Structures are given as structure tokens and as C-alpha cells.
Image (cartoon, rainbow, N blue to C red; front, side, top):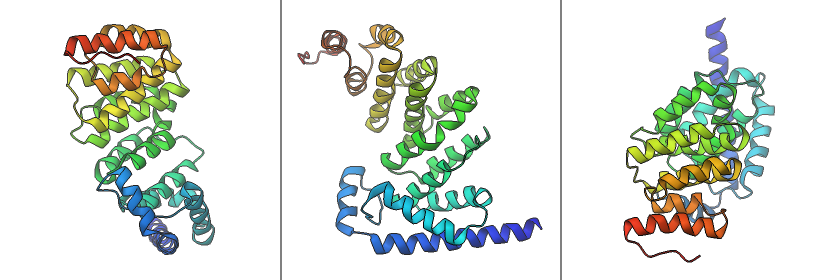
Length: 263
């Protein structure tokens, strides 16, 4: 029976993917795809479907209605197959499919998602959508799993490191994860993180901290402003009052012998 179910699920996955690929190919616009590539990086691959997530959702729902008798059984294998293609619209379809799950993902799923990011993510669009739409749900339900995010922060893979930041940015917005944000930032400082792809997400994470827990953020910035990378500090402080923002940014500028800020 289990073998039969596996064969049936494999067929469902194949049928849905064929349907989605036909739909995405017919809706694709090469000029639109090329424009997105300039924005999201040379490794970005897409059909160029206009209409964004709304159109992808429409096509996914149609494919599920036609081919999937039990979405719960097919969800993970189908999402994995879509994610593995490395094509933007298929990755977004995988994310939208996973968002349809109402029950919490088991905590061990975080390791599965880590493997997917490491193997298949090559642009910040998919990385960020996956983290803020799906990945964050696991440590939100199981807070001890933030220890896995600290492991991600020392991964050799830039997208796994970025995913740690984006996931904690989302968690900071919806829960009490200020201490985890500070811990992750300290880890990046200790390891002298240099990748701009990671810096942008690191700054985003700290900006969320500043918005949700301003007292915690100000204490942290007061002792680290001179050491935080320029891009990280600029993004982290962009919504602070001007006088506070300038004080913190110029603390770093003075130490690094850089031009002072005046805005």
C-alpha cells in the first residue's frame, strides 16, 4: 500500500509540474524575465510571468484542483520538486503551496528547508519570500529551533546566512526574539561577515529590532556602532530619530576615518 501511495504521489507531482510549466511558459515574457534578472542577479532564471504572485497563485490553484486528490500527501514532495528547478515562478509556487499548510511543520523540517536553500536558492527574491512566508513558522512554533539559525549564520553558503537574518527579521516582528537577533548579530561581528548580500539582510534584521524593541536596539547600537559594517548600520538606523541616527553613524565614521554623515 505504501509503495502504491508513493507511486501515486510521484504521478501527481509529475502531472502538476507539467501543467504549471505549460502555463508559465505560455504566460512568460522574455523581456520581463531579463529585466528581473538585472535586478535579482545573473543566476536568476524565470519564465517572466507578469502578474507576480497573484498569477502564480491562480495557476497553482488550477493545477491542484485538476491533479491533486490529497494536498497534504503531495505537498512536501511537490514543493521540493518545484523548488529544485531553480526557476523563480516554480520556486514561488512551492512557497505558496507550503503556505497553504495549516498545521505547524515538525521542527525537523527546518533542516529540510536548510538543504533546499543551500542547494537551490540563487537570488534574494526566493530566499526572502521563503523565509518570511514559510521558514519562520518553525522557530515561531518551536523557539528552541533558533539555535539552528545560529548554525546557519556560519554556513559557507551566502544564501543560508542571509536566510538566518531574514527569518529572524520576521520573527522579531511577530514574536519575542530580540535576544536571538542580538546573538546572531554578534556572531556575524565575531566572524567579520563581509558579504553584501548578507549585510543587507543583517541590517534589515536590526532595523526590525529597532522598530519592535527600540530600547534593546539602542543599547546594542551604542556599544557596536563603531564596529558594525557601514551598510548594516545605515539600514539598521534608517528609521531612528535623525539626531540618534547621526550620532551612531558618525561614531562608526570617526573610528573608520570615513566622511561624516549630515543626513
